[in-house]
Amino acid sequence: MKKAFLLLVLVAAGCGSPGSSSGTVVAPVSSAVPVTPVAPVATSSTPAPVSTAAALLPQALAARAAFLATFWDPAQKDYFKYDDHHAALFKSAYSDFWWGAHLLETTLDAYAVTGDPRERQLVDDHYDGFTATHDWEANAFNDDLCWWALALARAYETTGEDRFRDRAATIFQSIAAFEDQSYGGGVWWKRDGTGPGKNVCINAPYVLLALHLHAWTGDPGYLDRAKNVQAWMTANLTSGATVDDNVNPSGLSKAQLTYNYGTFLGASLGLYDATLDPSYLAAANAAADHAIATLTVNGVLKDEGQGDGSGFKMILTRYLVSLARHGEPRIAAFLAANADTAWNHRRADGLMDHDWTQPAPATAIDSFAAASAVSVQLQAILALAPAPAAPGRTAPPAFANVRVTADKGTRHGLTLEAKYAGFMGTGYVAGWNQIGESIDFAVSVPAAGRYVVAFHYAAGAGDALRIVSANGAFSLASFPGSTAWTDYRTTSTLLTLKAGANVVSVAYDLLSSNYLNLDAITVAPSPAR
Image 1 (tube, rainbow, N blue to C red):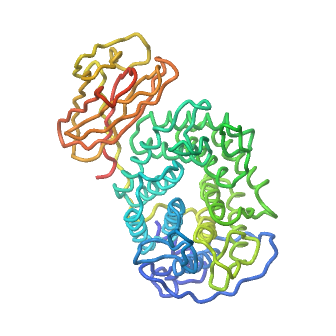
Image 2 (spheres, helix red, strand yellow):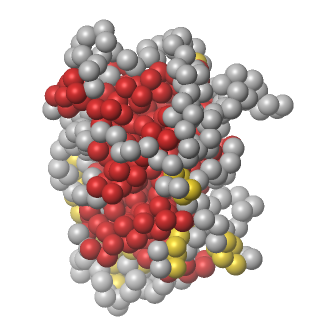
Image 3 (tube, rainbow, N blue to C red):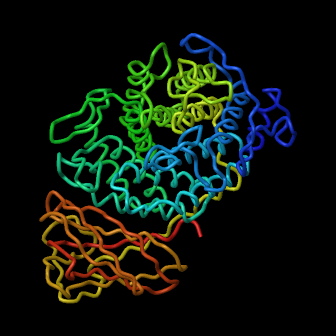
């Protein structure tokens, strides 16, 4: 189906078949390729007439080729930060941490449109290059990590490669420890306490990531997390259709930023797909309409400056594609008009900058700004003629979850209690706060590999910690506090299990803290082996 879609678009555009030399427009990703200069077109800032997908394809491919030829370094397997490849004082010459996640998203957009195997290879190369030069644990920004997890979740769903899924799931677990009841709920923006705020830019992506994990595992705990955080955002960071930025010790920041509208409407759409609750779809449409009405100039998304702000627009347009695919043709028309306007202000080398309504400057252009303008070209095509999944994708098989309740476990120094309703078996283990107290759960799995282990629990006294182990490997699991002992929640971790019988142990030791009522565990087999 992908090949049929691409052939249809290419022929309609007069570009020949996918196998012809005239149809092979995407620049090779293995080396820098010279791009034939394309003269910029001077226009007003008024959006051009709506294009068809066929009309947009040549400019999208030319824009992608120009971007790769300028920014991609095949030796480093990373993107230069600036088009002239200079490095600022004490800074790397390569793109910033969180920019990289969105440059990967642009590659996935290109692969979704073209099915080009070179774009597929670039997904692997970029991830390998980034991983070789970055320490995932050293980044104090939860949103930076969550952007990468979302890009990798999409990469997994496109390619079926377990390593992308596993990295995304591991990042989610590390971020989940920073969800608490300060300000009534939500996730902290930073891990080190230097940015004491809870922002849309972490909470909405966190909802989206939880929905990916729910789809992969079938674990309702992830859906519960997504719904709870979305409800908190709606109550604390929105007012009607307006999406604000963050809450912090000084109060509410009402900065109006395109990417916050994008992720909020994306999270709303994801919850609509998961629940079919029409209120979520209404929220997505309201946020989109408000952004289009207030964050544009003559129908074109406004300039949000250089640096980080230069790429905000591509995050909004990414999730507008999702809304267009829910049967909203006005959104597809909006994306096409923005794509045309940006392209009509390109530079002679084919690069576009952060202000889509003005000619791209002769001075340095950064990769985030350039990728944002490339992305809207590709996204406009996806919105006007949505492409199916990339060729070669294998859908994950259905999960066969294994649940073991506490009354079936082997208890060491612990007894069952059945005081607080909401447990799944005949009781839960309670009152354990002494070193050496533990419970063992016997589980059997069909094959060796990584598994998601979810814990059904209540922590009415506040956040708790326990040691979780299996087959000689140990990890410290966080159990965020619940509002009451009847408020049962789910938290998860990843464990490596062997084929056949395993014992998952949860114990109180020197690193553990606080009381915990543990009711059950659910083990979800890996979705792609």
